[in-house]
Image: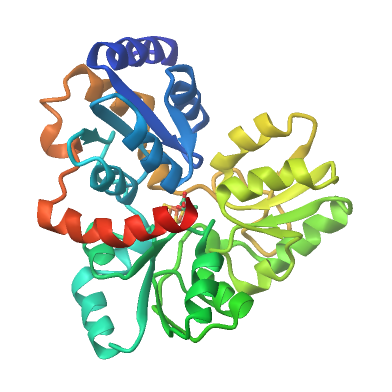
Length: 324
Ligand code: CIZ
Ligand code: SF4
């Protein structure tokens, strides 16, 4: 088998040959994020990935992340070809919100404005009035509340109830969750804080309420990275996917980062707090894909039916305009 130096070299050459740009999510493996950086691509959250892909001159985008991120990139750039190392990389929030059931739920509540998280399929986005990421969920719902609108929120119930509490809006929740974030335990974080009493706690709002309550800062991936620069603490306990440590440590090289425990006993854990679908993005399958894009079109290329893409673009465009 090829060693990783060979794979990295091969990937770099092939990206150049194809004139392709590699965009990677914060939760992918460090070597994938490093490749995106080294080749003029980008490491970002889902919205910034899609925006970067849209604005980049490359006609071929390679998205290292999970499927909804590839779909969003394709919806924003229908004229570009979008490939992923594997289309099997999905997300428990996307899986837990099938478009037909969701559409029926919306039909039962026609008086509510439908707000969906970015972590959803193109078909679910197409049924929504608004798409939001965790970075702007509070601002958008605050705005809708000020307009007197009642909200139907999907799919993440933890993020939804966080948004409901912060804004005071009338929010009806879909029952979905992230299998990574819902495993963080308040008890474990409190135990770890005894060992690191000066550490600030950073929490992604896909985590359970009891964990959010312990946070010194709650926010999206990019907001949590910024918090390590903004807060004076030298140490942090971080409740989000541990893939984020690559960029977080880069942003704050002199700070000490601890992964928040997912068990109840305060023990740190190396294999947990790591999304199994993000981990499907590997040097091997990335290199294979780039060796022959056409051969992998059936298993790795994102297609979103044109009418569906146009429908999904409307709530996405609303979000882009709102955050502009
Ligand atoms: O948990 C995720 O998958 C996140 C934070 C996605 C994103 O970048 O918005
Ligand atoms: Fe989905 Fe959670 Fe994985 Fe993010 S970390 S892709 S929300 S399962």
